[in-house]
Amino acid sequence: MHIEQSSIVVDQTTVSYDHFQMGSKQVCFLISGASYLYDHPYFYYSRMALLARDIDVICIHYVTEELFSMTDAESNVCMTRRVDAVVSEVLATHTYENVQFIAKSLGTIPLAALLAKPNLQTARFVFLTPVLEAEVVEQIATSSQAGLLVIGTADKFYDEAALETCRTSQLTIDVIEGANHSLDQGFEIDPSLAVLGHIVRQIEASLFEPLPK
Image (cartoon, rainbow, N blue to C red; front, side, top):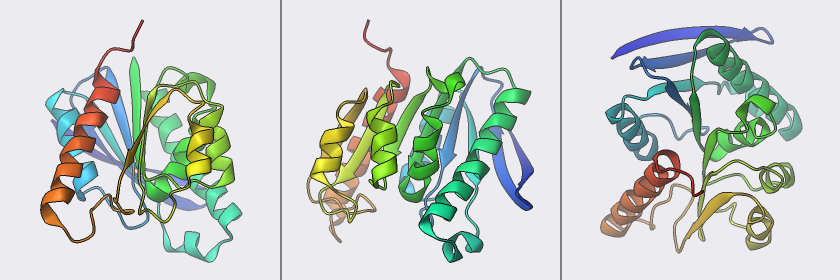
């Protein structure tokens, strides 16, 4: 395995990304939350599962302090432009036959915007604790890609009506009773670890199992 650190300038901001190269024809882009980073459990174990299958992995470092001084609308546009720029550069400079995405929390906002891109219609998408605001919900509801959406009933973004709208998509929706925005069961260790194991298995199934014919 070779890890290449690269960067691209987007709107005068340098956006870096780490490229774990396994010599694969498959790639998975990881898109972090604001503070839920790539060394946190769901990204750590997802990356482990990907690398175990010799799949290339891209970790995008798109979050900067200036995002939090913008309006929500401005921040959403800025995040999306940064993530899209990295994805576009990687796919333009490498030949990948299969593309996958895993995003959590804040990162699900730019991920949802990517659903409409023509060259990503066969990609698979995993949304962990998505920010279920109106635009994201609409983008998910009108999408056709396979994948997974996971959220807990104790998450501040949990919204049953929004989830019902999302059910028109092709995503498998997994609602975890009592899980918070970190997908933990409060401060309970064993139940939280059980949820972690369950969701990692769900991610593996969504990304690696053949689609039904």
